[in-house]
Length: 69
Image (cartoon, rainbow, N blue to C red; front, side, top):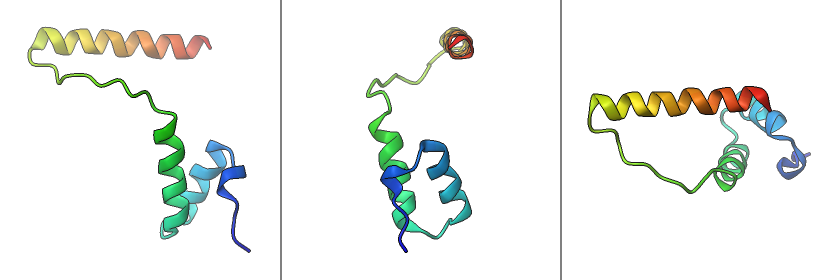
């Protein structure tokens, strides 16, 4: 019986892919699911230490926001 990847939660699908690393259909479903929900926003690579520090601050702020939700 073939698993129904579309009915799996993200956590279940991730666990399935980890448990079955050779299952290409599961991997494609996993990538499709996560890329379809990803933000299309892109960012330039930081070019200076100041920009790197700014990115680190933004990442810390985002992680704090996620902890509160």
